[in-house]
Image 1 (cartoon, rainbow, N blue to C red):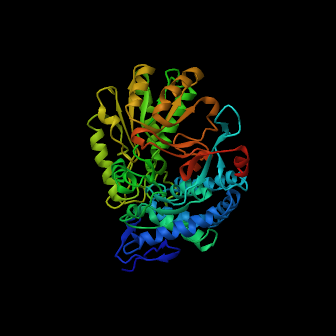
Image 2 (cartoon, helix red, strand yellow):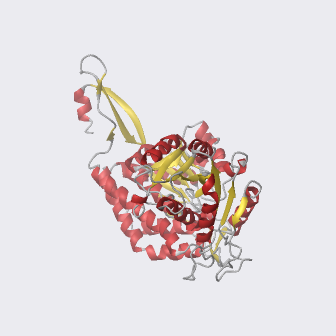
Image 3 (cartoon, rainbow, N blue to C red):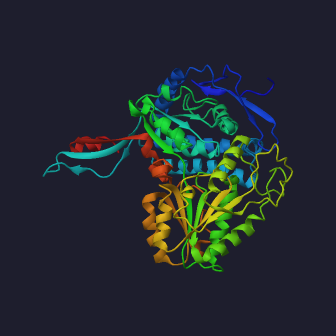
Length: 517
């Protein structure tokens, strides 16, 4: 085959798989781009090298010294930024603004952790709270601390964010002193592999500190040991397989899961049509449906509005969706590109058929042809808005996530009903609230907080500055309970907790002082 085969970086060296490999394609043109394969790699040996060489070398450094390495990695990625955009265009089918969410988001997050890490200074372990006396006299005390785990961090990532998905996890892991092994989703592995290649060739990190395995995930979990950590982003079905693996059940490998999520947007009763809050909801819904063609784990899937507003909301959202041009992202007139593959297009259309049994189609974009794209080849999907006035009986709306430019408008009777309907999503990554009544918004935020990792409240006074329902900022928590996986990422320096062991040292004040925390 003349299609280039991407190499894996494992055990401190570049290695090609011995199999034919999987072919990565341009999802718009259908052309073959590169191949990936991990057949024949000695994963146990590569993982041991990462632990004994990569993690050991990182943990010999202070937090500030590791932070300096992150800052150097950020400069390398920034220098190659244009090449990453070219790869995203070819392999992910995204328009430039959508690629920026992934690529620039990754670079920004890496830089943010470099700045936070610098502030941690010359320590090699972190104090966790103040010491407390264990008796009447302060001669014997307990001090909690966090120390880096001696294993490695394995990331099994999703196809939708090949850049950000790597660095939002790798930044806190490397800052914590844990070597990283990333297994990107096959469909879009090229961008992840190229970023790792650029950092490795720059010679910034110690050998074994950063590895990439492209292709099948077979054998990865088998190579894990008790002090390793595993972070997975993907389907709930695959997450269930991971949770049942002996590495997790027998060896207690610490595991973070981000899975399915039926995220919501809620319009409060005070936000009537014509008000700024109503317009903000409409704008954000359309943006969330179309950015990266709706292929975001945080995208809005359900839109809850008061019953009297249902018709006006359907009309306003549909009108804006009608302005979205879909097709080849190389055409400057195209606003929304393609899904990542024809396989993903089939999945979206199958999900649409399921939702159509519980909700009416309000807008499907069939009136607009694809721009510079052949519908028989391109993995392009027009945005689809569905709707139901009978959300209590439309259970499919609360069960099925369509990972594409699809959302369902849902009517509610009152706020108690709205909260109940949102909660039927069984745990989500994010919910956004729209209105202008601070007290009502606060009540809803508190009512919905136990069911979400993030509550994004949009009022007219933050219209120009809010970061967006679906944008994951490193300062805030990313993750969610229940069907969203139960995991936590980011949230500032909270992200370091996953890569550290919390311990209590019970000793005299003199010994605790000598810890140097």
